[in-house]
Length: 272
Image (tube, rainbow, N blue to C red; front, top):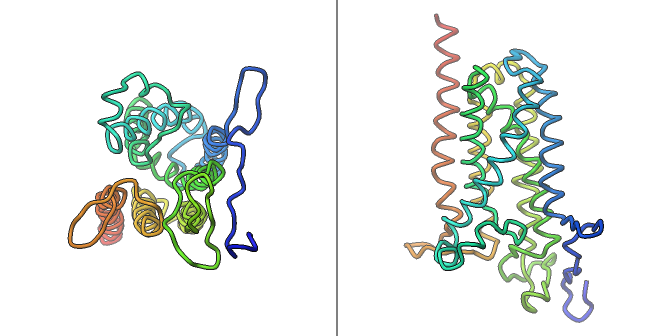
């Protein structure tokens, strides 16, 4: 905390975690790696519980598919949704993933496509696999937001709250540490909610329910955090909204449908 401003000053972290000769490993890359590995172990843990439709080898095989889907979908999502004009003018930079620029909504679509293909190849129900992935995804989301904070990117809006932080590489204004808000909501809180539900057998048996809860939870968390995050793109309607909030609306609607469908299916099976 700075005695002159009474606000916290962002420590200038090195975005590089470590280097091995010419190989440079960044914190953001470590967030992806550990998010995938820890998420995989958590999926294995849940897969052992009834109804145990997804087998451990399915989780292991899915890691490669999910990784490719995340990287390809996340990058294309960033290019197409957030700054298509720039990348049309600099097409070679589309391939420069190491420079940053990954969109969650694009990564989500990429993972969904990968899971659809893999589920068909493995002859398992899509939502049996998707529910396990949904329960594990907040782990990677939380780590990714912490990496955003370390990189000093995606900063919050100016504020005067006591815990405001000045990001000197941006300006001298105190801002919301919105990356921490996102790590707590998209990561810790959403993981906790899904963990409680995932350990209830009747919820696990309602295929698609955990996926629906994840979509609902992420949509609300993203809409909330966007109120404190410096918007990358604003839409001028009756109220100020962000592109990130609008992209979360379809997730919210489809998530509600999946939860409703799960409850309806369970009610029909009990009455039959």
